[in-house]
Length: 388
Image 1: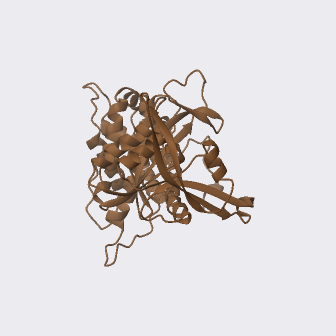
Image 2: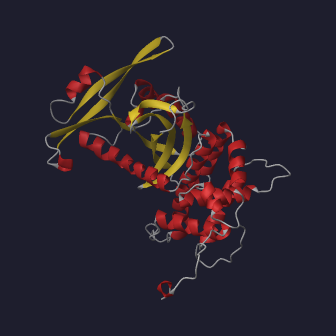
Image 3: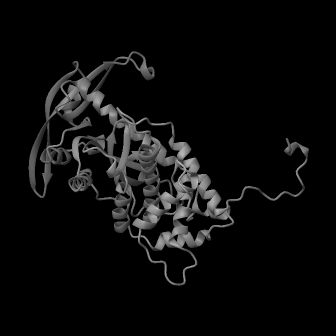
């Protein structure tokens, strides 16, 4: 859709859809062929609409009278995208606008996200296998890198995980991305999936401040977490690589609190955090600062709401849907800050504009552009009960 609307001091639904489609069209380069009965702009329109609607491309196209055929869209999505290219383009898309609104110093969060696979056990090639979770050991897995700025989360990179990928290899790749950006890293927050000697070695080599929860490996740490009160101890892990081994030492902040019936639990709750940061002096500091990363889970909940549904096992298509769902969030935060927030002395005023309202606007714009069906056939005229 290429409507041109005169500026009137407002962001309209069709403009939001245009913004998203233009971003995809400009950054993604694929060749459809001279005989193609569809344009890439039309593919992008359907793709954005399906993600914003949280439905499948087939359903959206079948319910629309002015959209390309679903088979044509799905054919090009399956055959025109390569995984390596898509990961690079995905990173470019995610960083496209947000880098301009990030401060020079940011907190970053790396996370591993596993989407359970419940299909045929013999059809799990190319999936990521891990310990049992939610009734399966096979997952569509993704690693994400976020920048956290005053409770706002901007995705900077996403990559698909397969068997053989390790937390340290993912972290090294993410650090390489950070090294290429004009940003200073205040601290790195990691989930427990990154708790191992190689990741800790990487953090120390880059001299990054960090916080992450520990895993109860070995008798020593299990004993420390079963007795005593809040304290700081020194701990170490041994790493092995290509026949060489080394020991990495780091402080562990053991935070102890009384449950007092919270979540129907009683007694003492003990949590350990591997942390090395100038702003962390006590175990309570470690717990407080690590709690900041919990907001990242909200990004996953939002992503689950705005991702096109599919039954395909094509990894490129599934990754594309994840990228678009994360781009939707980045664009919302970028537009909210740059266009909706009111500049004023002392900081911008953020007017209320929820992510749900944003995606509803994009959804309605896509429905209008694709002429989604707004009525269904009836075998007789509606009677007076349908009139008011």
